[in-house]
Image 1 (tube, each protein chain N blue to C red):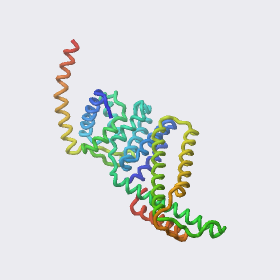
Image 2: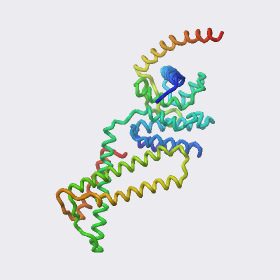
Image 3: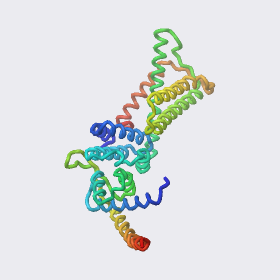
Image 4: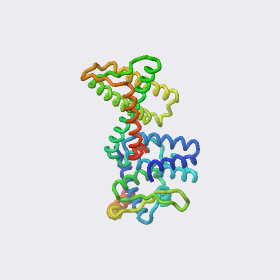
Length: 111
Length: 228
């Protein structure tokens, strides 16, 4: 599947953010999308987390387990695996190595 | 939870959607399910997950396009792309199972009706004479025919789900395929020249073999859950 640079970038970043949120606490799909939006990622359509969750499971970075939720219905709750924690660390390192230079470039470019 | 239980849960929960959302979600289900080479368990798990999301989002006053974007088909393709692929092994076993059950049913119906017609109305013969070679070719053709029919219908469903095709067009297409299927089904044995050793068996034997084989497949299915 051909993807634009923009959507590839966004996907990679979204993946990292999802790993970070799941690392803080186990969440189910809807909860995760609400959290992403609360952090301000409102540009992403909510449903786009599901292809990503599937991919992260395939890559064994997260695992989902069906559990009874407090409100009744069974829900799939996700947690990070060991590999997932490694991948999150890797993402943080990569993000830091890009974030500052890009900010600097954009600031200069803006002048 | 087994995929059958998840499907039941899904059927139940779907009722909480509004008419419009339900229709949209059902189209998604049809489209995703008919892409048959993916794990059923994984497929049903993600379908239920999406449905739960949809129901909750609806309660929070969100629209379908806020959740799935503006191109539903593209969204479904993305999901399908990420569902872990089913081991081919299971598909082959499933295909073999359906093929045997289908042949058993044909022999049963053909054997019993031919026997009945001969017994009660003295029409036709109570013995089936066929040559082994062409018999096997006919069986092969029947299996191929079933395979093609299933493939074509699945493809048709996939292509038309999000197109809002008129009911009568859908009906006409289905009717056309079925007519072609029945015509070929009828003419294949007549078109294949006989070769190989000739065998004669009482026609009721064919019915009995078909019936026993069919019951056998049901027992095997209970044990191994090919279709459950």
